[in-house]
Image (cartoon, rainbow, N blue to C red; front, side, top):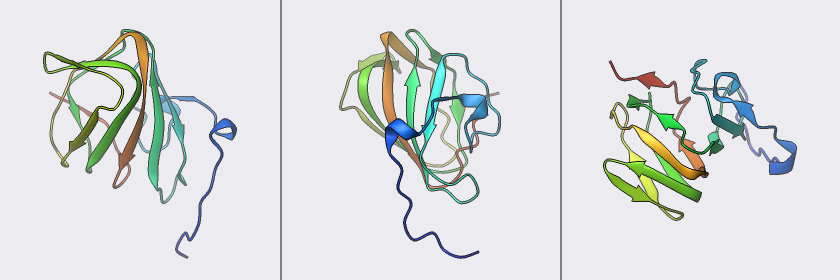
Length: 123
């Protein structure tokens, strides 16, 4: 496979998809979660703009790779604390975390993964 040299997309040209229709998440379905995927479905990069409706709950889960989140708008309740815009979170592969509960205004954040995220609910 020839290496991808440049991939450029304009945010307004990328559609919002439900999580189950977003490349990389293995068909996981969480109501109230929408994503704009900026990569190539076959090779990444795994870069997303993610939107949660108000009060969306993402249960405890893990991913197949390392994760970076950067909260742009709204708020999250995570681990008994509430975080607002500018909150940065880094997680190592396999870490189970959550639940994440979006505030009454919802949330918008950047999500960057080092490979396809493959969402895994905690047992």
